[in-house]
Amino acid sequence: MTHTQHRPWTTTLREHQRLRQQISKLKTFLSFGAESEDDVEWAMELVRRLADLGDSLGSHFDHEEHSSLFRTVPFEVPRFAHRIDAFRSEHRAMMRDLGAIQTRLADSPSRRLSSIAQDASAFLGRVERHEEGENEILQEVYQVDVAAAD
Ligand SMILES: [Fe+2]
Ligand SMILES: [Fe+2]
Image (cartoon, rainbow, N blue to C red; front, side, top):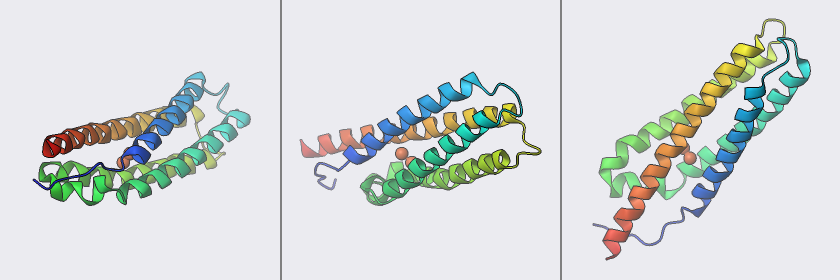
């Protein structure tokens, strides 16, 4: 096994922690819901929060795809390669899905805020599962590293 030194996971883990906080606040916001289907103030606030989330996710995915988790782990620990490949595809899919929700939200004449809120909550659940899956891999890789260093 290749001897692996301490890996710079700190940034990824810190970003995961920040994302968790951002998502949890957004879930709380969504759980209160709009007062009506034409609650413009609530819709504007959701637009702002989804834009912030999009920024966070975009830079997080970009950072992650340049990190050793995506760059070297698939070669060093081939049994993780498939899952890591799936994470990369999910990044694209999640950005597309978020964009679709934002487009519906921007279409004020025909939008239904309650259904958008539901889909946004489901989307957040998906992001959470994605990040948890990555944390699992990070933990397993850490154990492989520790075993290799022994
Ligand atoms: Fe990811
Ligand atoms: Fe991540």
